[in-house]
Image (tube, rainbow, N blue to C red; front, top):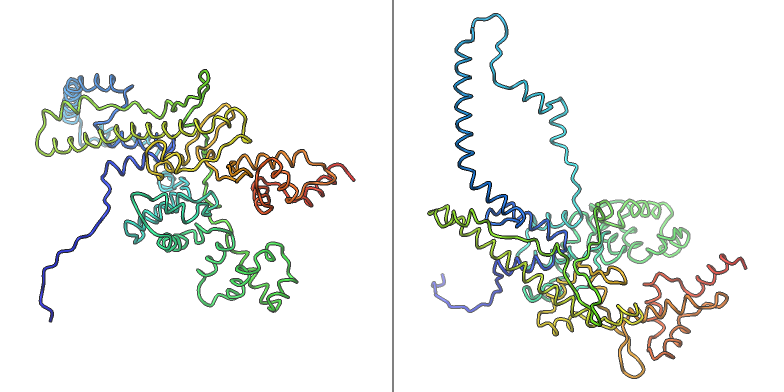
Length: 492
């Protein structure tokens, strides 16, 4: 048996203070979420109050003692009258007892019908996909770091449940609070993909179907062939190319039908059954206006909820002691943290927005074709914050400009090199491609290679593959597809 020994070890552990956690959470909330979150805190914390309600609340608190005395007096008078009436009632009367309990009146007003309990039990609420997944993460056996990674993955999903951010972008969004490697993010991603609905957080439809097939009970008829089809021949399945699937797989007709039936019973869009688009309104967090020769940004008036400390409870804190004073002091500290975090959030959001506007003045004046390349790191260095802070401040926040309303992340884009070694925004390049296609001859639409050569004449170096990728993101078909569309439209 080994002898017990005493050892000294030095370890490093990152711990977030409650105030920092709250500041991070407030920064990533959009305008509507911020309003709901603040209202929740105001309801829970008696030390917090809205300024418009402060005067009314103060008047109510000064009159509370008088109202309490009057209420007690009225109650005592009613009790005395009820006792006197009950004493005078003949208990041996042959009629039913009619004690003044108020029961019949209460029963009618509450509308206690046979289906009352059913209406109470029925839950008509509709949780979003994000709420559904976050609830599962809280109940699952995730450690603190894995729970943070899983939460970041959930916030990177689109309405259909697909993962839109790369592994690197998810890892970057966790910094500096959580520092992990790509393989750690991938490991947590595999766990999230097996939450309900199975296949959520997939990168594409093929991966989603493969995950759902692997989750099928062992021995499911046709699962092996269905897995092969989903992994290697999904395009043939989508095109319903039955003869070609028979030839490529070498399977029998009966086995192929069984596998196809299994695939068609799966859900290619795991988030489709959730009402993720309900009450989605684009409400600007930032306004941009031209003041003389300068573009000026201002925050939405709702970004400042006009919170204040409740004077009644602050004065009560000075008079109380023991556990009451300890409780009120804790709530007072939470209220001060919230006010400080809100001020920091607004200041950071305004700095980030003004930096974006200063960079994209050409876009505000001339449109997408004048968009400048911009990345998160560049903004972070200009305003002196971490890159993850800029990422949180620009996620699901919207800016109202004279050219419309845009998400703040819209103003960030990669770049394309120019012949002289400069850089052109990818958004501006897409705008030029769109302009070339709109003005192309209908009898001879421009190919991707021809568009690449025309861009080079303007000084933009874009390979044919780059042009094809940008064209697809614009929702524009290939030259042959456009030629067929032109023929249908003009009838030749």
